[in-house]
Image (cartoon, rainbow, N blue to C red; front, side, top):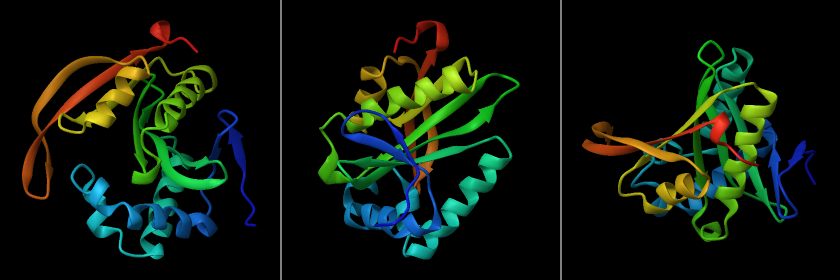
Length: 183
């Protein structure tokens, strides 16, 4: 078994810190869930090899050193099933955005909601942030539900905010303040 540095989320879920040796496992998640992920995540078509995942890990780790990102792989019952990150971290403004991705066969199990709760704990208690945001395509109902189930409030819809595969997409923006967060 490969060496993995874990952070316990609960009795089924751990966060695993990304190392290049785990790039193959997260690539398999993307590769096996392309049709599920593609409508909302445009990186799917450019993630064609383990090397692409290794390069993504290197970028995220470089950004973590600069203080703008934190990436965690999600391990469910011993298997890598997705990832979650904090990006656009601003210590000046005490805020960040959460992004996440989960393999199709693992949806509907509460994995992402529990993972978002843990990221909130890290952001608010360890990193001293005050505000977290989640941005989800208006048509991505599961992602919107994760935000709501995690205690985030819909603060608005940015119309034609993101271009995915040549189409302008509307995005819901959710926010959670530290004062409104409950473990």
